[in-house]
Image (cartoon, rainbow, N blue to C red; front, side, top):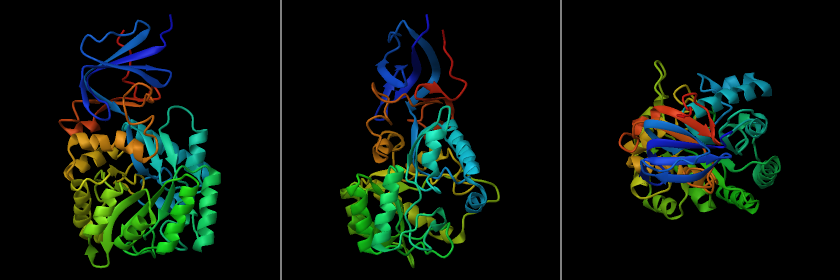
Length: 398
């Protein structure tokens, strides 16, 4: 008899909300069909039993901000420029594999060239992370990441850019509301669109049913983005010409409106790689700003910006979630931020980020207990995507 179901038993389960002891999770046809608990929880007679002693089972992790087209090399922008589309798609496959190896089963790609992240998810074979895709970020002429092609000039250009993203099948609109550190000629503490242009962009995107998340290092850009009604703010660095400032009213608005803040956490140190001096000078204050948002109850998730530098490899999210605990979250809150909460932020809360009947069988098992020591997220022993094993260590016990 061919067994159609898999039953997974571990020492403990974090189901996306809370911890469960002695779980038994049953998977069938890419979905979770049952979750039971207790050392004597019955195994369905037609199920293969996989036992993971000493392990914690979790939902697959969700990174809310990656760039699959960037290779995390010394100069990812130049590397991208040197590659044709086929080479970029191959690099995306490597990036996706790196995410899965770390237990990241869903990513939101917030900036590519020529909508290649959408093409990749349609053509890739084998187990892949679920990709929520923005396509090229909408930016100003000469603005941050203009080399990705999403340049919009004035209201008419913004309307055309949003319409193109809709027609190409983008899931979210990413707008570069301020300058960025990867683009020469832009200024991180200055806004790139007028308040009225940003409001128009958000209105157009929402008219088509698409959420908007704004890259915003600059305080002015954050203020404009909040006023425009964005759904998310990436980085949220509160930069000004003379430092970092977190006005009480701006913080209160972000908290009250439940605007998703993508904290740019997660760094894997690389010998010889040092961050730019300007970033190092302001980084403590920028992290303190995120810490304040955490303390005041803002909706904060980890968006690692994976791919943009050697210290930001694909699959760095476990380190990003650990960093959230350094910024004031408990391990439980950080795990929620990387699973159930992140799923809601990327628009997949009805099928991702929980270990519950009816949800996709995207699962991560790690050695130890990340609820006690979140560093245990760095010890994956099994990863499933839609019920299919990615790591070879997952095998039946019977």
